[in-house]
Length: 150
Image (cartoon, rainbow, N blue to C red; front, side, top):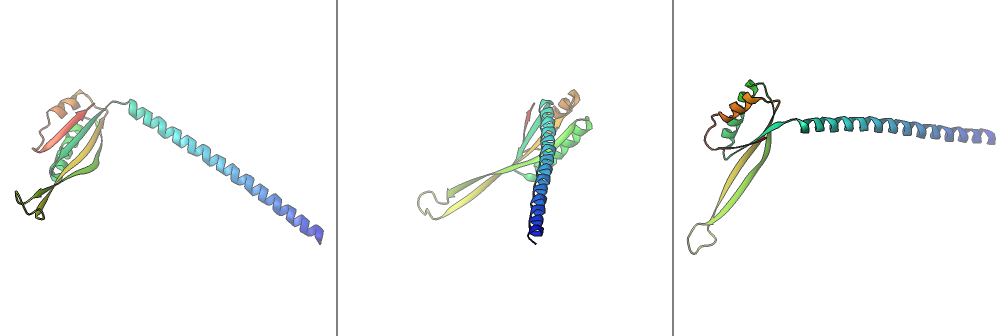
């Protein structure tokens, strides 16, 4: 009876050792695959960094006008054969102003005003000289601030 118990215990110990070894092997395989994926993503980022791009930052107080302007920019640039990445919605900048209603007394009576600046970001890659000419000759609505960086 004692031999059967010791044999069962020994086989249990061997089984746990075997399972631990399998878990280690699977973990190692997973880590090597994850390293390959990370290296591939890093090489893609390096290629993207080396590629020339035009970065367009558009600002406006009205979100409808900025959306129309972005749509116009994307259509014009895509007609020239360039690739457009975006639009990326940047955080809306909110400026709040508190003003006294009266000029001298009544400090408890105040008005609050808010000014919102909506922002969008576009990246243009694989562009040509025709794309640059198209961007400079764009007719955008009033109230749009455009910054173009290379």
